[in-house]
Image (cartoon, rainbow, N blue to C red; front, side, top):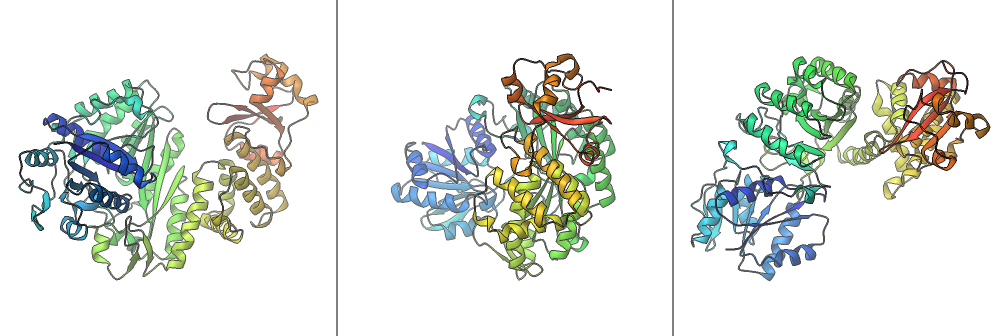
Length: 583
């Protein structure tokens, strides 16, 4: 029997760990399957045509909140063309409401509930033998117009029994995609907006096996491995040996870990302090700081502890720190949401992700607050309004999130926003509300803005929207110019800011004197003027700018110029004195 397993990923850069787990599990059970990945951004008819080329007799779809609507559309198309093909679905979006799925979608023949590595091979073998497959635990199906089978959610007891999902993978095929990996399943916490902690059991893949598999990523030259463990740091016996290994790797690779900050210990931080810069990035879910909301969603935030942890991690300056805030949680109105934003922003994460609550099927919030929520009835079931947060505020926050994503989270305006943040502290949200209000006045929410026009928008706000003194505007101009030149690697020119390079009559001697300039740019060599112009910019700075930049590095008292040199990812800068004034 020809079987195809498929999924619609959210983006091209993503790769499906679930399909690889199922494919290798089937192979180890002697069950041959084909695998195909698509995205929700592709044309449905193109996907249908490609699926049709497999001539499959059974097709399985992996279902999530982001793809369920389009997946069901593709299933309808497949059934229209191939009415006899068996359609089965699995994944978190269908596992908790299997009977309802079969009742609502007549073109779906089977729902496989829970983890499929043991269930799927057994199910396919049953179909191959001529059975209907509903004797397999976890399989609910429509047979002869009647729904029958098991409604038990399945879990794999021993994760070490599962093969490495990438055991036959040519990693070159995934060179520009995110590599996902799983060393544990389950979560010890019971957050009511999530499905991962529905029981208390966390199952681990053994440390020696995980280390062996991580080494395969390293040997293949993989650039990033993103762990999908819901709480990577919930067991020191498990996560510490893995972190020690990550830190010891001698090849350039990044490991993305989702952790619970409240249980991160000082010993963990001491260990993380040994990591090379860029080796590890941490994602931490704060979600809210409002106590009634925390109680409602069954979370506890030890705020003094979290503040201590973030202060230490930020001081290391070696890893990307990503914190989460959720809009639409129970009891959190706009005023308390503002406080949560300000509390989390004050921790100085590199990224503060503003997410909007998804009313997941099977989640506690969807069950316990049926009259308090208005949400999209189609996946991903995003909140539209709550008893505490009217639609107008949710709609405004969608624009706010877009502006915040383009400015703070994009990392394009680090120097400017760090300075502005101190001006607006502790009410940081007021700054981004002002930007959002002007964004709406200019109807930028209805436009596609280029990077240059985004920079011009910020200067427009600095000049006439934000309440800045003349001196503050002058410093803001210099900071925005520095951000533009360094982040965009000289691609954008801040001429609209009145920025200009220092006269060549002042700076030619600097570039000609290799030995002198190498005190500031150790790898500098003078080649020719065309090359210098391509890779370097030099311009004067004010005394106020000099003081501001002392927050980032030691600045000579006689510093006269900012010198920026183009590198691979951005332009690095330093402050140098006028020629002949070296300390």
